[in-house]
Length: 182
Image 1 (cartoon, rainbow, N blue to C red):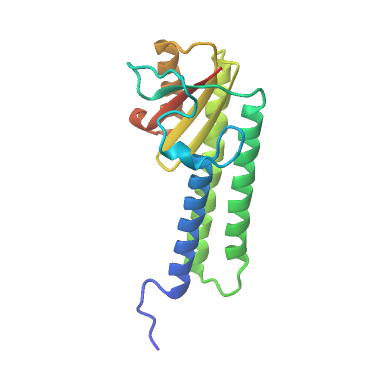
Image 2: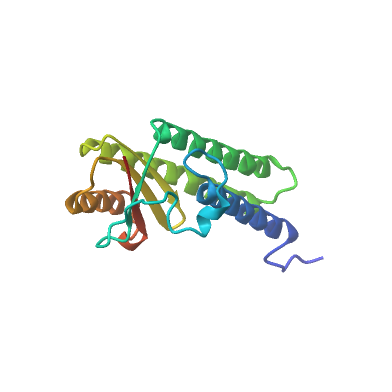
């Protein structure tokens, strides 16, 4: 039988697994609160805390109250989600039944994941070098969220952060969200 079908069962299953993994990571990040608990009402509310201030002139900047260990917990959660994703990708790579095309797709996905990790680390390091107390960057597709620990974010500092992010990640400024954490 001649194999003229471009997409076989394996490729479709692999694509669905990758999409499901991406959706799970995004939903986990989107609905997890600062304390790591699930906050389904957060999707409906415009603010996580009553009385939170939001800058009128810069809609991509939000103020969030944080706990002392917020940044460490966020980095830990991010590392765990990435480790889980890599484990799933490794399972597909180790599958004897997987064809070369499926393995190439998984390899590309792993490379993209590694590039995101490298970019996030570079962004965080450069922002800290600019004098900010702490920060964490999370790349999700073509978007990035940067949480910065500061006592007040000036417009010039916001522009510095956007410049660092666009230089390191090539993400457009409209897809950058800067969140201030006190």
